[in-house]
Image: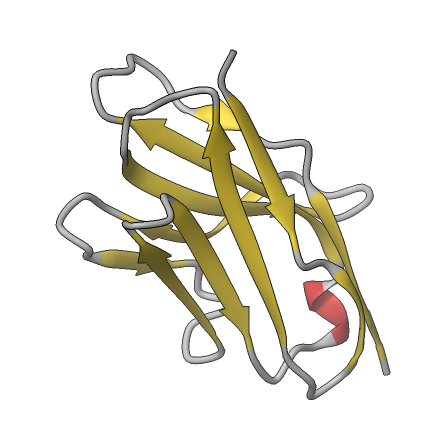
Length: 117
């Protein structure tokens, strides 16, 4: 059974940094597209960043210039480096991984990020 797991969340002070990781188990297929999404209480889920099979990236307007998405193909892992975090970045961060030869992406359970001012 394919499972996606996020890690690296926690509490951080505004202006600080945090790095999230997302990895997959239960499949030998490589990650084709990796995406980070977040959802704060009372708000809709929004795209944070996405990395595609050609390593091109896409960022949500709220995080451009502060967050960086990357991948380690050897470890089949996608990362999200969060710099200069703000209180508005507080949310549950979920990873979605689309694997090669799979028809849909897999979601992880999420990791909480809390930014205090």
